[in-house]
Image (tube, helix red, strand yellow):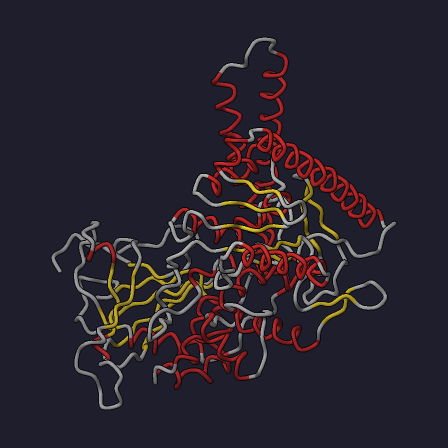
Length: 553
């Protein structure tokens, strides 16, 4: 902390191009001269320069150097008697006058003098007390600054709105200067956007790895190895999910003007087709259950599809990494377990104990690595018919909700008195239901488009190529295998002590595999080797049959 009051100079330009002019040099020269004439030191350790940050929208306070200065004032790091030099009061704020006045008062009340270089005026508590009209003058300046910015903002918004409407109507094909453009594009000489080749390759690589089930760390590592980047700087991991959701991948520019949303189709060159984007959104909506976690990604756990056959609750994985390991450093097979949540959390499962996940993983991988088994498992309807039915029902529900909201709104408007509280409450409830139903429909549309876009799921060869890597706990192989499991099965049911508890020598694990196409197989697995010695087809048009667990086990 400084021991003497100092002079600080604050520079702000709403457009970075303004920084190239001479005003910055003039203000710094003025601040230096002002400090020298009064025997004070100009402090250059606290950088107070905001370029491209609007004082009308208060970005210079929320994101910029002025916000840093105000925080330093509040924390007492700017000593009373210090001076802040600005070109004019409109550099401090162009917000609503009452808000702008409050910011000036915050600085002045801290014992700091504000000096405006454009007219040489000084604002501090003593001077404002002696000359109250200076306070009125500062308010008039702020009113004028706000009105200028407000008029400009309305003009700009009106122009952007006309451009958006023109683009949608096909009468305008210029650049719409609003919001940020995706970093994988650039504006060409013909005033249309084109792809930046190396950045487009980076984004495509990132998307492909995301679809394969890789997490952010692995993706960024691979991009770095290829000297590729998906950002212009900053944390790349944080940008992955933003890019995946960005409709600019389709070539659309999306923007909002005064609450009205616009989608400008064909504004950018597309990186993905409609079906590819829908498939990507479907995967993103399931992302929480697709990424492998921890040192050893689970093949059948953590996907939200594996359940206990005895009570129906989730089955989770547990790796006991602190116990004695094998010579190769891997945990013992028995130290990687499958545990029923219903039993471990006292939620009513009557069958205790756990089992090793190793034989279960081995059985699933080997079963699917056989093309005959996989073909029989995947044949039949892909589920798109049921999805289309659910989508039609959802759309009808939206129409019904909209009709109800319209009726309630009409009733509220027709009532000359204040509308009943119950009406307003019901309207809010219906609007919340409508928003939820619209989100559900969007997810169904993505899933249906992804289903239509998909060809036959991965062949047995893809599974066979991963068998050894999965066994050797190779992170890459297990991540890819995990993705295959997520793409192939809708549900996996584990009977960790066998389906038939009355006649089981406790040497088998029964596993019910339910494919996304609806076909099912029951595997009887040797709990030591993982070899499966029976594969039974089941008709599960109703609920999954549960064994009798009333006997003692």
